[in-house]
Amino acid sequence: MSAEETRALLGLHLAGMRADSPPDNVHALDLTGLTTPDVTVWTAWVGPRVAAVGALKMLPDDTAEVKSMRTHPDFLRQGAARAVLDTIIVAAKTRGVRRLSLETGSVPSFDPAVALYRSRGFEEGPAFSHYTDGGFSRFLHLDLR
Image 1 (cartoon, rainbow, N blue to C red):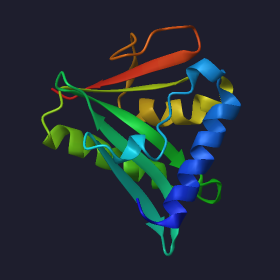
Image 2 (image 1 turned 45 degrees about the vertical axis):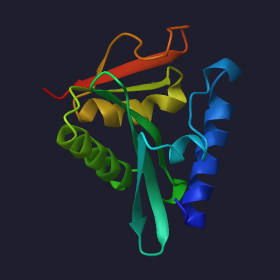
Image 3 (image 1 turned 30 degrees about the horizontal axis):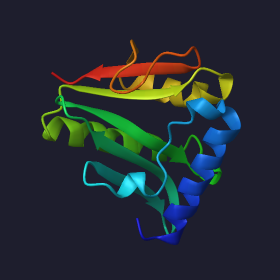
Image 4 (image 1 turned 60 degrees about the vertical axis):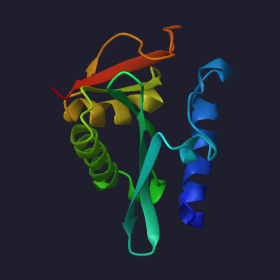
C-alpha cells in the first residue's frame, strides 16, 4: 500500500464513510488497520491510475470480512470494484474461508455497493464478529462451502 494513489483513494473512502455514517457506525479501517498481518489489500489499476481498492480481513473462526471497498469516482460502474471483489472471493476460497461477510450502511448512498455484493451472491443476515446491530448497518454474507 505504498502507492500514493492508493493512499489517496483510501483517504477518500474514509471521508465518504464519515460523511455518510453516524460517528459511532464508521467501521472503515484506516491505513494502520489495513497493514496488520490478518489483512490483505488489492487494487485495480487503469494505466497509472488506481481505479478501486478492497481488502480481506481474516477472522479467527474460519470466516473473513470484506473491508475498504471503494471505487475512484472516475471509474464508477466500469468493473473495477467487481474485479477486486472477485479477487477477494477467490482468495477467501483459497484460504479455506467458510463464510465471507461484510458490514455496510443502510442509507441510499450504500445501495450501489449492496447491489454489487448481491450480484456476487451475498445475502443479508445477522451481525457478525464484533459488530452489533444498531439499526444503521446492514450485514451481508456469502457461504463459501
